[in-house]
Length: 449
Picture 1 (cartoon, helix red, strand yellow):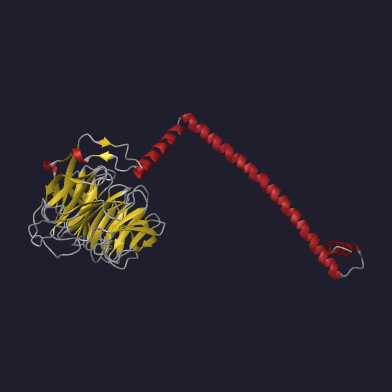
Picture 2 (cartoon, rainbow, N blue to C red):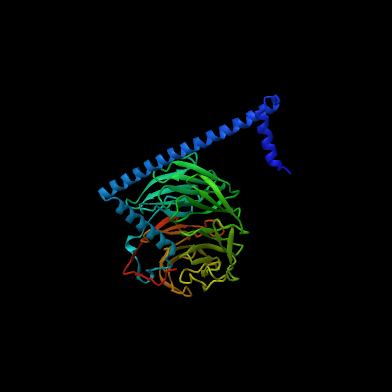
Protein backbone atom coordinates (compact mmCIF):
# COMPACT_ATOMS: atom_id res chain seq x y z
CA UNK A 1 0.00 0.00 0.00
CA UNK A 2 1.59 3.29 -1.08
CA UNK A 3 2.28 6.14 1.37
CA UNK A 4 0.21 9.14 0.44
CA UNK A 5 2.84 11.82 1.29
CA UNK A 6 5.50 10.16 -0.89
CA UNK A 7 3.10 9.30 -3.70
CA UNK A 8 2.18 12.99 -3.99
CA UNK A 9 5.84 13.97 -4.18
CA UNK A 10 6.62 11.25 -6.71
CA UNK A 11 3.60 12.23 -8.75
CA UNK A 12 4.83 15.81 -9.00
CA UNK A 13 8.33 14.67 -9.94
CA UNK A 14 7.06 12.31 -12.59
CA UNK A 15 4.83 15.01 -14.02
CA UNK A 16 7.83 17.26 -14.51
CA UNK A 17 9.79 14.60 -16.37
CA UNK A 18 6.86 13.74 -18.59
CA UNK A 19 6.81 15.92 -21.73
CA UNK A 20 3.10 15.19 -22.08
CA UNK A 21 2.28 16.71 -18.70
CA UNK A 22 -0.28 19.52 -18.67
CA UNK A 23 0.76 23.19 -18.63
CA UNK A 24 -0.85 23.63 -15.20
CA UNK A 25 1.25 20.81 -13.72
CA UNK A 26 4.48 22.20 -15.26
CA UNK A 27 3.66 25.69 -13.93
CA UNK A 28 3.13 24.37 -10.37
CA UNK A 29 6.41 22.47 -10.55
CA UNK A 30 8.28 25.55 -11.80
CA UNK A 31 6.89 27.60 -8.92
CA UNK A 32 8.02 24.98 -6.40
CA UNK A 33 11.51 24.81 -7.88
CA UNK A 34 11.71 28.61 -7.88
CA UNK A 35 10.72 28.69 -4.20
CA UNK A 36 13.41 26.16 -3.32
CA UNK A 37 15.97 28.25 -5.20
CA UNK A 38 14.88 31.34 -3.29
CA UNK A 39 15.25 29.42 -0.02
CA UNK A 40 18.80 28.41 -0.95
CA UNK A 41 19.58 32.06 -1.76
CA UNK A 42 18.19 33.16 1.61
CA UNK A 43 20.35 30.59 3.41
CA UNK A 44 23.43 31.86 1.60
CA UNK A 45 22.46 35.47 2.45
CA UNK A 46 22.04 34.59 6.14
CA UNK A 47 25.43 32.87 6.17
CA UNK A 48 27.05 35.90 4.54
CA UNK A 49 25.33 38.23 7.03
CA UNK A 50 26.56 36.07 9.91
CA UNK A 51 30.10 36.32 8.61
CA UNK A 52 29.79 40.10 8.29
CA UNK A 53 28.26 40.29 11.81
CA UNK A 54 31.18 38.31 13.20
CA UNK A 55 33.54 40.72 11.49
CA UNK A 56 31.78 43.71 13.10
CA UNK A 57 31.79 41.99 16.50
CA UNK A 58 35.50 41.39 16.19
CA UNK A 59 36.04 45.04 15.25
CA UNK A 60 33.90 46.21 18.17
CA UNK A 61 35.80 43.95 20.56
CA UNK A 62 39.12 45.25 19.28
CA UNK A 63 37.89 48.83 19.72
CA UNK A 64 36.87 48.15 23.33
CA UNK A 65 40.26 46.57 24.06
CA UNK A 66 42.01 49.60 22.56
CA UNK A 67 39.87 51.96 24.66
CA UNK A 68 40.62 49.96 27.80
CA UNK A 69 44.34 50.02 27.10
CA UNK A 70 44.19 53.78 26.57
CA UNK A 71 42.33 54.30 29.86
CA UNK A 72 44.85 52.09 31.66
CA UNK A 73 47.69 54.07 30.13
CA UNK A 74 46.39 57.30 31.64
CA UNK A 75 45.23 55.66 34.88
CA UNK A 76 41.58 56.60 34.36
CA UNK A 77 39.83 53.27 34.57
CA UNK A 78 40.56 52.67 38.25
CA UNK A 79 39.50 56.20 39.14
CA UNK A 80 36.18 55.73 37.38
CA UNK A 81 35.62 52.43 39.19
CA UNK A 82 36.43 54.01 42.53
CA UNK A 83 34.04 56.88 41.79
CA UNK A 84 31.32 54.39 40.85
CA UNK A 85 31.87 52.39 44.04
CA UNK A 86 31.88 55.58 46.11
CA UNK A 87 28.63 56.74 44.53
CA UNK A 88 27.03 53.33 45.07
CA UNK A 89 28.07 53.24 48.71
CA UNK A 90 26.76 56.76 49.21
CA UNK A 91 23.38 55.83 47.72
CA UNK A 92 23.21 52.67 49.81
CA UNK A 93 24.02 54.59 52.97
CA UNK A 94 21.12 56.93 52.29
CA UNK A 95 18.75 54.08 51.47
CA UNK A 96 19.65 51.68 54.27
CA UNK A 97 20.76 53.83 57.20
CA UNK A 98 18.22 53.99 59.99
CA UNK A 99 18.82 56.97 62.26
CA UNK A 100 22.63 56.65 62.31
CA UNK A 101 23.29 60.32 63.20
CA UNK A 102 22.99 61.20 66.88
CA UNK A 103 22.96 65.00 66.89
CA UNK A 104 20.08 66.16 69.09
CA UNK A 105 22.07 66.27 72.34
CA UNK A 106 24.73 68.53 70.80
CA UNK A 107 22.27 71.00 69.20
CA UNK A 108 22.76 74.72 69.83
CA UNK A 109 20.83 77.66 68.37
CA UNK A 110 23.14 80.49 67.31
CA UNK A 111 20.74 83.20 68.46
CA UNK A 112 22.94 86.19 67.57
CA UNK A 113 22.98 85.11 63.91
CA UNK A 114 19.24 84.54 63.47
CA UNK A 115 17.82 86.71 60.68
CA UNK A 116 14.69 87.05 58.58
CA UNK A 117 13.32 88.73 55.48
CA UNK A 118 9.96 90.33 54.85
CA UNK A 119 8.75 90.37 51.30
CA UNK A 120 5.36 88.72 51.49
CA UNK A 121 2.40 90.99 51.97
CA UNK A 122 0.30 88.16 53.42
CA UNK A 123 1.22 84.98 55.28
CA UNK A 124 4.06 82.89 53.81
CA UNK A 125 2.81 79.35 53.31
CA UNK A 126 5.87 77.37 52.21
CA UNK A 127 9.68 77.51 52.10
CA UNK A 128 12.31 75.45 50.27
CA UNK A 129 16.11 75.92 50.33
CA UNK A 130 18.30 75.20 47.32
CA UNK A 131 20.51 72.08 47.55
CA UNK A 132 23.71 74.16 47.60
CA UNK A 133 22.46 76.26 50.51
CA UNK A 134 22.85 79.58 48.68
CA UNK A 135 19.18 80.45 48.21
CA UNK A 136 15.81 79.95 49.80
CA UNK A 137 12.46 80.14 48.01
CA UNK A 138 9.20 81.12 49.67
CA UNK A 139 5.61 81.67 48.59
CA UNK A 140 2.83 83.71 50.17
CA UNK A 141 -0.93 84.18 50.09
CA UNK A 142 -0.55 87.38 48.06
CA UNK A 143 0.35 85.06 45.14
CA UNK A 144 4.10 85.56 44.82
CA UNK A 145 7.34 83.59 45.04
CA UNK A 146 10.55 85.14 46.35
CA UNK A 147 14.09 83.92 45.67
CA UNK A 148 16.34 85.09 48.50
CA UNK A 149 20.15 85.12 48.62
CA UNK A 150 21.13 83.69 52.02
CA UNK A 151 24.80 84.68 51.82
CA UNK A 152 24.31 88.30 50.76
CA UNK A 153 20.96 88.58 52.54
CA UNK A 154 18.96 90.14 49.73
CA UNK A 155 16.09 89.33 47.40
CA UNK A 156 17.21 88.08 43.99
CA UNK A 157 13.94 87.83 42.10
CA UNK A 158 10.16 87.79 42.52
CA UNK A 159 7.53 85.84 40.61
CA UNK A 160 3.96 87.12 40.46
CA UNK A 161 1.20 87.54 37.92
CA UNK A 162 2.16 91.14 37.12
CA UNK A 163 5.82 90.44 36.44
CA UNK A 164 5.40 86.93 35.04
CA UNK A 165 2.32 86.38 32.82
CA UNK A 166 2.70 82.58 33.01
CA UNK A 167 2.53 82.59 36.81
CA UNK A 168 -0.38 81.13 38.82
CA UNK A 169 -3.53 83.17 38.29
CA UNK A 170 -5.45 82.20 41.44
CA UNK A 171 -2.74 81.88 44.08
CA UNK A 172 0.33 79.79 44.91
CA UNK A 173 0.07 77.41 47.87
CA UNK A 174 3.32 75.47 48.11
CA UNK A 175 6.69 74.84 46.52
CA UNK A 176 9.58 72.35 46.38
CA UNK A 177 13.11 72.34 45.00
CA UNK A 178 14.61 69.59 42.86
CA UNK A 179 17.44 67.86 44.85
CA UNK A 180 19.67 68.23 41.79
CA UNK A 181 19.17 71.99 41.78
CA UNK A 182 17.49 72.04 38.39
CA UNK A 183 13.84 72.98 38.95
CA UNK A 184 11.64 74.89 41.35
CA UNK A 185 8.12 73.42 41.49
CA UNK A 186 5.19 75.57 42.57
CA UNK A 187 1.65 74.39 43.31
CA UNK A 188 -1.27 76.67 42.49
CA UNK A 189 -4.79 77.11 43.78
CA UNK A 190 -6.06 76.34 40.26
CA UNK A 191 -4.63 72.78 40.50
CA UNK A 192 -1.60 73.24 38.24
CA UNK A 193 2.02 72.44 39.11
CA UNK A 194 4.48 74.78 37.40
CA UNK A 195 8.19 74.18 36.92
CA UNK A 196 10.75 76.99 36.84
CA UNK A 197 14.46 77.10 36.07
CA UNK A 198 16.06 77.46 39.49
CA UNK A 199 18.87 79.71 38.21
CA UNK A 200 17.08 82.03 35.80
CA UNK A 201 13.56 81.68 37.29
CA UNK A 202 12.21 81.27 33.76
CA UNK A 203 9.07 79.23 33.15
CA UNK A 204 9.71 75.64 32.01
CA UNK A 205 6.47 73.63 31.95
CA UNK A 206 2.95 73.09 33.28
CA UNK A 207 1.90 69.81 34.90
CA UNK A 208 -1.89 69.77 34.83
CA UNK A 209 -4.35 67.16 36.07
CA UNK A 210 -5.54 68.01 39.57
CA UNK A 211 -9.12 69.28 39.86
CA UNK A 212 -8.47 71.49 42.91
CA UNK A 213 -5.68 73.42 44.58
CA UNK A 214 -2.27 71.88 45.26
CA UNK A 215 -1.53 71.55 48.98
CA UNK A 216 1.93 69.95 49.10
CA UNK A 217 4.87 69.13 46.81
CA UNK A 218 7.91 66.92 47.30
CA UNK A 219 10.75 65.52 45.16
CA UNK A 220 12.05 62.04 45.84
CA UNK A 221 15.61 61.98 47.16
CA UNK A 222 18.38 60.22 45.25
CA UNK A 223 16.35 59.70 42.07
CA UNK A 224 16.24 62.32 39.34
CA UNK A 225 12.94 63.61 38.07
CA UNK A 226 10.36 62.15 40.50
CA UNK A 227 7.92 64.79 41.75
CA UNK A 228 4.78 64.19 43.83
CA UNK A 229 1.87 66.57 44.35
CA UNK A 230 -1.04 66.42 46.80
CA UNK A 231 -4.30 68.26 46.31
CA UNK A 232 -7.60 69.34 47.78
CA UNK A 233 -9.18 66.87 45.33
CA UNK A 234 -7.95 64.11 47.72
CA UNK A 235 -5.51 62.62 45.22
CA UNK A 236 -1.73 62.40 44.90
CA UNK A 237 -0.09 62.55 41.49
CA UNK A 238 3.31 61.29 40.46
CA UNK A 239 5.14 63.29 37.75
CA UNK A 240 8.28 62.68 35.70
CA UNK A 241 10.09 66.01 35.30
CA UNK A 242 12.51 64.49 32.80
CA UNK A 243 9.68 63.74 30.37
CA UNK A 244 7.44 66.53 31.73
CA UNK A 245 4.54 64.16 32.04
CA UNK A 246 2.12 62.34 34.32
CA UNK A 247 3.05 58.86 35.57
CA UNK A 248 0.52 57.69 38.16
CA UNK A 249 -2.28 58.77 40.49
CA UNK A 250 -2.96 57.58 44.05
CA UNK A 251 -6.28 57.62 45.89
CA UNK A 252 -7.25 56.72 49.44
CA UNK A 253 -7.77 59.87 51.47
CA UNK A 254 -11.32 61.12 51.94
CA UNK A 255 -10.39 64.67 52.93
CA UNK A 256 -7.92 67.38 51.93
CA UNK A 257 -4.35 66.06 51.98
CA UNK A 258 -2.34 68.31 54.29
CA UNK A 259 1.24 67.20 53.71
CA UNK A 260 3.33 64.61 51.86
CA UNK A 261 6.92 63.48 52.33
CA UNK A 262 9.35 60.99 50.76
CA UNK A 263 12.99 60.03 51.27
CA UNK A 264 15.01 57.64 49.08
CA UNK A 265 12.71 54.62 49.09
CA UNK A 266 9.59 54.67 46.87
CA UNK A 267 7.29 55.07 49.88
CA UNK A 268 5.20 58.23 49.93
CA UNK A 269 3.97 59.45 53.32
CA UNK A 270 0.78 61.53 53.56
CA UNK A 271 -1.80 62.82 56.04
CA UNK A 272 -5.47 63.40 55.29
CA UNK A 273 -6.31 66.20 57.76
CA UNK A 274 -9.94 65.58 58.77
CA UNK A 275 -10.12 61.96 57.59
CA UNK A 276 -7.82 61.31 60.57
CA UNK A 277 -5.52 58.95 58.70
CA UNK A 278 -1.84 58.73 57.86
CA UNK A 279 -0.94 56.67 54.81
CA UNK A 280 2.14 55.27 53.10
CA UNK A 281 1.71 54.66 49.37
CA UNK A 282 3.98 52.02 47.85
CA UNK A 283 4.96 53.59 44.55
CA UNK A 284 4.62 51.23 41.61
CA UNK A 285 2.93 48.49 43.67
CA UNK A 286 -0.60 49.94 43.75
CA UNK A 287 -0.92 49.33 47.48
CA UNK A 288 -0.94 51.45 50.62
CA UNK A 289 -0.62 51.19 54.39
CA UNK A 290 -3.16 52.99 56.59
CA UNK A 291 -2.34 54.24 60.10
CA UNK A 292 -4.91 55.49 62.61
CA UNK A 293 -4.02 58.21 65.17
CA UNK A 294 -5.57 58.53 68.62
CA UNK A 295 -9.19 59.63 68.88
CA UNK A 296 -8.49 63.20 70.02
CA UNK A 297 -6.53 63.96 66.85
CA UNK A 298 -9.55 65.25 64.93
CA UNK A 299 -7.32 66.57 62.14
CA UNK A 300 -3.79 65.40 61.28
CA UNK A 301 -2.27 68.39 59.50
CA UNK A 302 1.39 67.52 59.00
CA UNK A 303 3.79 64.57 58.70
CA UNK A 304 7.48 63.95 58.02
CA UNK A 305 9.86 61.02 57.74
CA UNK A 306 12.61 60.54 60.30
CA UNK A 307 14.08 57.51 58.52
CA UNK A 308 12.78 54.80 56.23
CA UNK A 309 11.05 52.99 59.12
CA UNK A 310 10.02 55.88 61.38
CA UNK A 311 7.82 58.91 60.81
CA UNK A 312 6.16 61.67 62.81
CA UNK A 313 2.72 63.30 62.66
CA UNK A 314 1.27 66.46 64.18
CA UNK A 315 -2.40 67.07 64.94
CA UNK A 316 -4.77 69.92 65.66
CA UNK A 317 -5.12 68.82 69.31
CA UNK A 318 -1.46 69.77 69.93
CA UNK A 319 -0.09 66.22 69.94
CA UNK A 320 2.98 64.80 68.21
CA UNK A 321 2.95 61.07 67.42
CA UNK A 322 5.91 58.82 66.63
CA UNK A 323 5.21 55.88 64.33
CA UNK A 324 6.98 52.82 63.02
CA UNK A 325 5.96 51.38 59.66
CA UNK A 326 5.37 47.99 61.30
CA UNK A 327 2.57 49.11 63.64
CA UNK A 328 -0.82 50.63 62.87
CA UNK A 329 -0.90 52.70 66.07
CA UNK A 330 1.64 55.29 67.24
CA UNK A 331 4.32 53.92 69.56
CA UNK A 332 4.67 57.29 71.30
CA UNK A 333 2.25 60.21 71.73
CA UNK A 334 3.40 63.54 73.14
CA UNK A 335 0.19 65.32 74.08
CA UNK A 336 0.12 69.09 74.49
CA UNK A 337 3.56 69.23 72.91
CA UNK A 338 3.65 73.04 72.86
CA UNK A 339 2.56 73.66 76.43
CA UNK A 340 5.73 75.74 76.87
CA UNK A 341 4.29 78.38 74.52
CA UNK A 342 1.65 81.04 74.95
CA UNK A 343 -1.88 79.89 75.68
CA UNK A 344 -4.35 80.64 72.90
CA UNK A 345 -7.71 82.21 73.65
CA UNK A 346 -9.56 79.38 71.95
CA UNK A 347 -7.49 76.78 73.81
CA UNK A 348 -6.19 75.15 70.62
CA UNK A 349 -2.40 74.81 70.41
CA UNK A 350 -2.13 73.33 66.94
CA UNK A 351 0.86 71.48 65.53
CA UNK A 352 1.01 73.09 62.10
CA UNK A 353 4.46 72.10 60.82
CA UNK A 354 7.08 69.38 61.31
CA UNK A 355 10.56 68.80 59.92
CA UNK A 356 13.40 66.38 60.55
CA UNK A 357 17.03 65.99 59.61
CA UNK A 358 16.76 62.64 57.77
CA UNK A 359 18.38 59.60 59.40
CA UNK A 360 19.03 61.49 62.65
CA UNK A 361 17.36 61.71 66.06
CA UNK A 362 16.28 65.36 65.68
CA UNK A 363 12.88 66.75 64.74
CA UNK A 364 11.41 70.25 65.02
CA UNK A 365 7.78 71.29 65.44
CA UNK A 366 5.91 74.55 64.94
CA UNK A 367 2.45 75.69 65.92
CA UNK A 368 0.37 78.77 66.60
CA UNK A 369 1.32 79.54 70.20
CA UNK A 370 4.68 81.25 69.92
CA UNK A 371 7.35 78.54 70.02
CA UNK A 372 9.38 76.33 67.71
CA UNK A 373 10.39 73.21 69.63
CA UNK A 374 13.40 70.98 68.94
CA UNK A 375 13.00 67.34 69.99
CA UNK A 376 15.19 64.29 70.46
CA UNK A 377 13.72 60.91 69.50
CA UNK A 378 14.93 58.00 71.63
CA UNK A 379 16.67 55.03 70.03
CA UNK A 380 13.60 52.83 70.37
CA UNK A 381 11.32 55.71 69.23
CA UNK A 382 9.19 55.26 72.35
CA UNK A 383 10.16 58.54 73.93
CA UNK A 384 10.37 62.15 72.76
CA UNK A 385 12.48 64.64 74.72
CA UNK A 386 12.39 68.44 74.42
CA UNK A 387 15.93 69.72 73.73
CA UNK A 388 15.41 73.46 73.26
CA UNK A 389 12.94 75.98 71.83
CA UNK A 390 12.85 79.31 70.02
CA UNK A 391 10.18 81.98 70.52
CA UNK A 392 8.22 83.34 67.56
CA UNK A 393 4.93 85.18 67.08
CA UNK A 394 2.48 83.80 64.55
CA UNK A 395 1.53 80.62 62.74
CA UNK A 396 4.49 78.45 61.75
CA UNK A 397 3.20 77.34 58.36
CA UNK A 398 6.27 75.45 57.15
CA UNK A 399 9.67 74.23 58.36
CA UNK A 400 12.62 73.01 56.29
CA UNK A 401 16.22 72.13 57.12
CA UNK A 402 19.10 72.87 54.78
CA UNK A 403 20.87 69.84 53.32
CA UNK A 404 23.67 70.04 55.88
CA UNK A 405 21.22 70.68 58.73
CA UNK A 406 22.92 73.92 59.77
CA UNK A 407 19.99 76.19 58.89
CA UNK A 408 16.30 75.96 59.72
CA UNK A 409 13.89 77.88 57.47
CA UNK A 410 10.52 78.89 58.92
CA UNK A 411 7.50 80.37 57.10
CA UNK A 412 5.68 82.46 59.72
CA UNK A 413 2.48 84.44 59.22
CA UNK A 414 -0.53 85.99 60.88
CA UNK A 415 -2.81 83.10 59.94
CA UNK A 416 -2.87 79.43 58.96
CA UNK A 417 -1.79 78.43 55.45
CA UNK A 418 -5.19 76.88 54.68
CA UNK A 419 -7.41 79.75 55.86
CA UNK A 420 -8.07 82.67 58.15
CA UNK A 421 -10.11 81.02 60.91
CA UNK A 422 -7.83 82.47 63.55
CA UNK A 423 -5.50 85.45 63.12
CA UNK A 424 -2.62 86.57 65.36
CA UNK A 425 -2.59 90.36 65.08
CA UNK A 426 0.83 90.91 66.69
CA UNK A 427 2.56 88.53 64.28
CA UNK A 428 4.58 89.66 61.26
CA UNK A 429 4.57 87.90 57.92
CA UNK A 430 8.18 86.85 57.37
CA UNK A 431 10.59 84.01 56.67
CA UNK A 432 12.83 83.26 59.65
CA UNK A 433 16.27 81.65 59.20
CA UNK A 434 17.76 80.02 62.31
CA UNK A 435 21.46 78.96 62.23
CA UNK A 436 22.26 75.80 64.18
CA UNK A 437 25.48 74.22 65.38
CA UNK A 438 26.29 70.69 66.46
CA UNK A 439 29.18 69.58 68.64
CA UNK A 440 30.60 66.08 68.54
CA UNK A 441 28.06 63.86 66.80
CA UNK A 442 27.90 60.09 66.99
CA UNK A 443 27.19 57.64 64.21
CA UNK A 444 25.42 54.57 65.54
CA UNK A 445 26.55 51.70 63.33
CA UNK A 446 24.16 49.36 65.11
CA UNK A 447 21.14 51.13 63.60
CA UNK A 448 21.55 49.63 60.14
CA UNK A 449 18.75 47.80 58.43
